[in-house]
Structure formats: C-alpha cells, structure tokens
Length: 479
Image 1 (cartoon, one colour):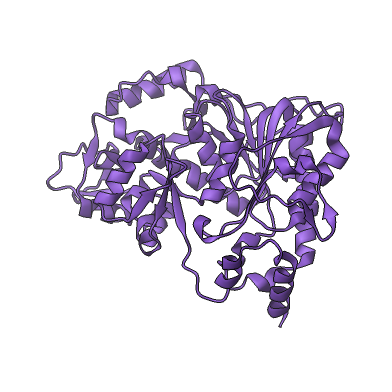
Image 2 (cartoon, one colour):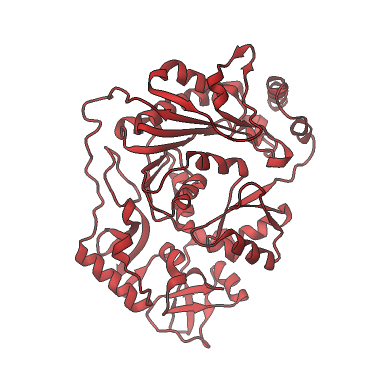
C-alpha cells in the first residue's frame, strides 16, 4: 500500500533526528495533548484559572508562559462547548504555535501583516498582545478558511483586524513596504500531524514537500517586499522537512543576503539542524529555532526564523505604491455620534466611544474599529472585512451585532439579563429563554450575560419568551 511505503520513507528520512518517543508513539493510539491561551482582553490568567477549576475542568498553568494552560484531554471536548468558550475567554492553541507571535512581538501602534492568517490562532494572539492598539491585516486566499478566521476574530473580540483575501504571493507587490512587521505562518506539509492523524501517510509524499517548499519561497519574497525597511518578518512552519525550513532559509540568504539578516531567537533547547543528507548549513542558520515533537510539547513540530529587513527591494512596477480606492468609508462624525449616543442611552455604557473607536460603512450597516487601526488604505490592497461588525438598521430599529454584544456586553448597565447556569447552557445551544419572571423592555435587544460575561443577545417575543439571536455558527460550536 502507498501509505505503508510513505510511512517507511518518512522515518527513513527523519530517523537521525526524530525523538525515540515520537517514533514509538506511532505504534499506539495517541491521546492528543491540549493547551489553551487566555484571552487577556477579557479576563486575566488567574481569574480564568479560578473560573474553570471551580467549574470542574482539569487545567494547570504552563510553567513558562502564564497565558497558556494545559488541559486534561478527557475534558477538552466539554470545555470547547462550554459557556466560557462561547464568551471567548480562551482559545485552544498549542504551545509551539504560541511562539511565532511572541517572537514577532509587535509594538503598540505598529502595522502588522499576517500573510496566511486563517484560522486566526496567531492573529487573535497578536491583537491581544498589543491591547488592540495597532492595525493588523489578516490575509488568506481560501474563502472557507477566511470564514473561520472571521468567526474566531468575532468570538475573541478583535476590533483592530481587517481581512483581505489575496494570494499571499501578490501582496508584496500590492502593498510594498506597508507593514512594520510581517508574520508568515506558512502553509506546509503538516508533518507535525504524522502522529495525530490516522490517514496522514495516505497524502504525504516527497513531491508534496517540494511543492510546499516552492510555494513558501514565493511567500517569503512577498513578505520581504511587504515589510518596511528596518522591519521584522517571522517565518514559521509546523513541519519537519528541512526543505521547508533550514533549506528555505538558506535559499533566502543565498538570493537576498543584501536585503536582510537573520536575528537570533533566544529559546532554550534549540534543535535546529546543522546538516541534512550531506548538505551543511551555515552558522547563520543556527539563529533559527526548531522544535522537535516529544511528549512534553504534545508531539508538536515547529520551525521559526526571525528576519530583519535591512534594505528596500527594487519596485516591481511603477504603480505598486499607489493607493487603491476602497469600497469602505468612515461614517460622518455626525452619524457616528448619533449611533454612539443611541448606544449609551439604551444600554448606559457611559463610554466616550469616539475617543477610542471609529465606525466604517454607513448608517444602515456599520463596523467598529479601534481608532488606532482605522486606516483603510494599504497600498493597492482591497479589504474584504473592515472591522468588527457593529450593527445595522432594520424596520424595527437599530440592531446591534452579535460580535459587538459579545465584546462589550459586560459593560452595559441597562437592558441586559443575567441568567443562571442552566439557562446559560441552553442559550449557548440556541434555545430561547422564558421571560415570565424577567423584567424585559419589549422591542429592545437584551444583552445576555452569565457571571458577568456576555454570551450574546435576545429580544422579547409576543409569547413572552426571549428569542435567541445567536448566529448558527456559534450555536454549532456549543452542540
């Protein structure tokens, strides 16, 4: 069988540097290790630890990174369907996957490009690292993956991210030197999943490895062009293949040495290769960082390179730095003030919205974005989703979006409902709430909360129930 042939070839290639327990792990059923990252824009790590342990979930903090918790695999499925997950208090993310955004470490106010962003693990992390102060362009070519990206941005409450849908290889020419920092978590051969997916070896091949390596080189050049002179690029993969890791960085140095330098990554237990199949790598390559899969990191493989752009590349064409017209516009100051005033009157938020936020779109449908991230022009890029959905005008009045309620609902001082544990579980599963004993204003959206955290919105029906207004994608997550 082809899968058996690939299995043998895989371990023949990597036998010299794969850990023994990784190889032996392939002979038995492996219980996947889970970690979660705290959404620090909504809750502190100590408070989440208390909240989840009191709810009966078995978790413990990571010794190295306070915002990471290790989850007992037996309770991870229940945790994924919990009301705490609905509220966007955490995001499941491996420890190795956590590192590229930490290493990129953008400063507050810098403009960041996430070149291959979906499903948004690192995009949401980057947003929270800077308290949403500084624009992020999250790009992905695949429409289905962009939908997953938008879902995660909405659940995590990221109001400083705009989404684009380009082939990442085009962006360097469309938005040359527009970004202070670029993250390229590149599409790869996914060899970290050799232990986790039963059918992995049906699809793995050396031809696929080389195909991905060629794509990654084009994406690396695009990232280099999109980054400003003096800016930083972080390149990462979750695969073992040296062709996609050390050899690709060697290729970049061989062809673009005049324009960049590799910066050292200060991490312990670096396992970057010095040679592979007779090909030796220079000392510069030792500045990269390789994580080999073992039990301590959930059998996760990762490779990371940190690149400083030292010189501008020649322009691709004379028009590449001209700004493209955008289909999105900011609302007038008058319309913004009108909507924000309505918001404060109905829900008593008592916030000076226009100091920190701006509205994009028009009075009938609008998006909310942090003011520090409200620029809509980025070279020739066209933005597909400009910000966090805010609301829309209907025949029955202005209706707030679900993501807005999820992000800001905990601040409302009027027209909110605090529900109990059972009601919270029912609500997350899309069920309506009996309103007989609740003081509810008819015709006004109610923000639904549990233990002070917003879970969504509902509106009173004629039969005395509160109609659940949770979007289907969020309901499916809780089922």
